[in-house]
Image 1 (cartoon, rainbow, N blue to C red):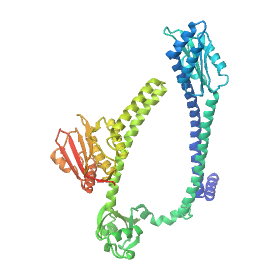
Image 2 (image 1 turned 90 degrees about the vertical axis):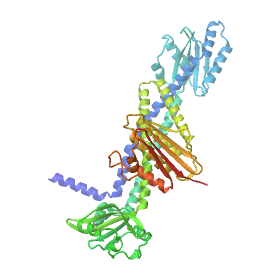
Image 3 (image 1 turned 30 degrees about the vertical axis):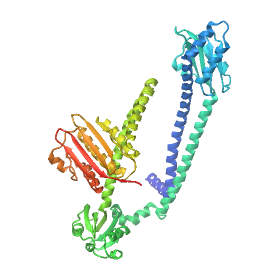
Image 4 (image 1 turned 180 degrees about the vertical axis):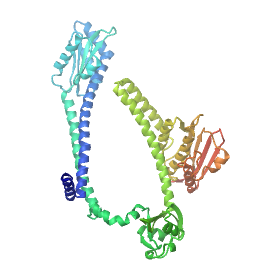
Length: 553
């Protein structure tokens, strides 16, 4: 009993001493520390390992080039066969090494089969390079071979055997880097990461202090408990906020009206907007059945009504306390604004779908690359990455040369990625062309229209057993833009064609569908364009959109 009381007392005392702003500063500072420090330590370790691997790979690469060089092989054969080796031949090999290794950091030593030094290329003056190179060469010369793992594990150096056509050893090549290169590179990377971490920590703490002060200012210096008590009577109204807000009591009299509601009603031509408070709501909101809401507790969501000369979308929620209805909260905004937002959101959905498809395709390729790295299959990794780069560059070049607008090009590339997910052959036709100087329609209009039609074709084809092909054409003429989407799907009958632009109509019997083509038709009408469809059962479907254009100056 005493223990529980003591714990509650300590918690109460702590909460009293530590304000909301202080709790925010402490919490964000801890989060930043926990997030940055382990990540920085891990990154530091990985950077040092990558630098070491990079140096080893460079050394081995230069070594392999020199060991497999016909110039080095023929020169060593000549020097080995001659009783008086030619200085000119050694100079020739030195010049060749200089051509291969343009770095002033790597050193190269070449020995003949008798362990005589023929080339010492050390432009960076690596300390003790000649002694360490000879020691490394002699330690492996008797073995006559070195495997790749041993070669990569030699610190900052690599050893290679030069062999003739009969696979006989005719010389040795040692490539090396200074220890200072690895140490300095690692130190620079570590210092950069530490400074970055420190900067992030400082920014996080400063941001926490600023955020705490800002929150304190916004809340007028009150703590959450005080705010909860002050706002308890208005929480239902705040939860119902859309744009304009009107609160009426149980008698239908307006008790609260915000400034946005006054402005919207002023635009609608309602008179005396500054004296609406205290009037009956039915005198202003004539097309809303307030009796059903106040008396029966009916809830109306996203309905349309005309206030003055403007059509609004409104939501009406009764204020209920226990079994009593205290009044109602009505929130509303212009229907035209809601429709514009719906059109924009539909466009954003198309962008998001394209981006998700590209991300999914990218992650699949990254899994393959990581697998090849784990298996150390570097040749296959090189071929795979080159193939990806070539295919991607070809695809990007094909789209960008035809569609000059970078946003539209990126969107089409995303649709290509999505089509590969669905195993659909999606193609931008060769005759497609669009200059990037449009004002009306905008690129977002084109994305909304083309995106919804393409997605409609994808939905039809993804469960289709026949040939799955979608072709897109975007043609830019002087006075109009023509968008053509053809698919090889099952087609539609005349009855379906008549209904496809109706809001909520869908052949999939799914309540979540049926709005894409409705929004497409609405957007095309707003742009004074036309849309036609040609389809027959078993013969696919073709949508043709024509939009009049306005060029930017």
